[in-house]
Structure formats: C-alpha cells, structure tokens
Image (cartoon, rainbow, N blue to C red; front, side, top):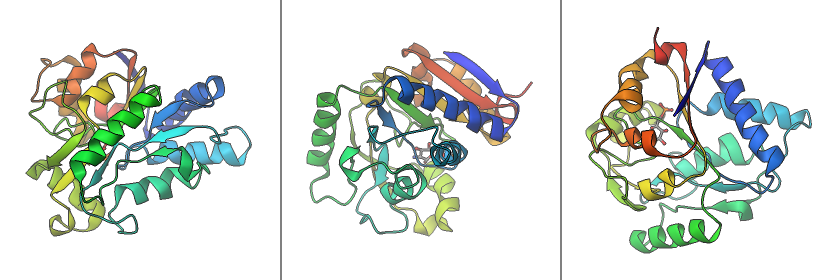
Length: 240
Ligand code: GLP
C-alpha cells in the first residue's frame, strides 16, 4: 500500500485526476471502476474540466459498474447507474457500449452477477479500480463480515450502510435494503487500485484499513495484500 496524503479535498481530487489521466494517456482502452458516493465527485469534476480543455479523452475507456441497489430502474433517481451516468459517463462522453453493467433491475440477479463476472474476465479484468471507503469498511457493497474470495452477488445492506446512504436520498426509508456488488474477487484482482478517502468521519475506519488486522470485519483491510494499491486521503481523514 502506498499512502498519499493530500492537504485538502481539492488537492485530493486533483491528484486522483492525475492518476486516472496518466493511466488513460498510456492505456486509452483501459478498464476502470468509477464508484458512486460523494468522495469521487471532485475527481469527476476535475476530469470533466480537463476534457473541456482538451487534456483528457475517455473515448476508448471501458467503464465497469461497481454496484447498484436491487430492483431499481435506470431512471429511478436512486439508481447508482444513473448516478454514475450523470457524474461520470455523460460529462466525459463515455459511450454506453463501453460500459459493463451490473444491473439492479433484473429478474434474475444471480444470472446477472455471473454474466458480470464473465464479462469482466473476458475484458481482461480491471486495470484501475477507483474505490471509496464505506464507513464500516465496505468496498462497493461488500459488507462485513466478508472474505477476500466473495464473488459478485446479491447482498443485504447492513444498518450502518443504510444509515450512511440515507443522506443521498433524504432519509433511511428511501434507501433500498438489497443491492448487487462487484465481488471482492473482482476488486482485489485489479491491476491497480486507488482508494479515495476524505473527511474526519472516515479517520478511524481508514486506520483500521491501512494498519489494522487483515480480516472479514473490515473488507477494505484485504487491500493490504493486493497489488499496486494507492491510498489517497486528505489530512482530515488521515490525521496527524
Ligand atoms: C457507498 C457505496 C460505495 C462508496 C461508499 C462511500 O455506500 N456503496 O461504493 O464508495 O459508500 O461513499 P462516500 O464517498 O459518499 O463516503
């Protein structure tokens, strides 16, 4: 694990944009996981600004969906695909055909998860997984306790995740309680990982991730054993 401590959130977003830009410059057809959540929004704004200045081209990028709530249509305001489309795909003009979906609105979730794993494998895996850190240490919706081999699957959200997602949708009652998530197997096999963490409220779970025991209670702790992992945190999250 390679930690980078940014002075503040804007600096964190700029450094994250540098890392994504470098990859896309050298590998225009790279496959990238672009998470939802609030932490990566500054990164996405920075990339969109670079695109407008002609400094970033995502025309050939392949984007892999990380997770979604179960049972929501794409036009539901809470759909995480819709969030990714609004925050990332549209501002960067990523063609729909370049997106590997994990569809929450499917009659057969297990088949959708198997198809996702097969499609990601056939695409050569993940070049860069940009990930946020759940307040309970989850990655995507890999809720604790979970092992490093857990596949892409249907999950029940823990009360902690429902609580933390409530701010996105205006209350706990609006948060779906089931989701599909890319498996730990997919995430930990990424050739490069960028974990972005901002804010003092993430400090305790960040330190358990980076230097706590590796195990199922903090899914992100398995990143200690993964390849080429950068932990990009602002000072508020990292502490002194
Ligand atoms: C959510 C998502 C994750 C996200 C994390 C952190 O529940 N499932 O993919 O990375 O929690 O979100 P935020 O960046 O808003 O703190």
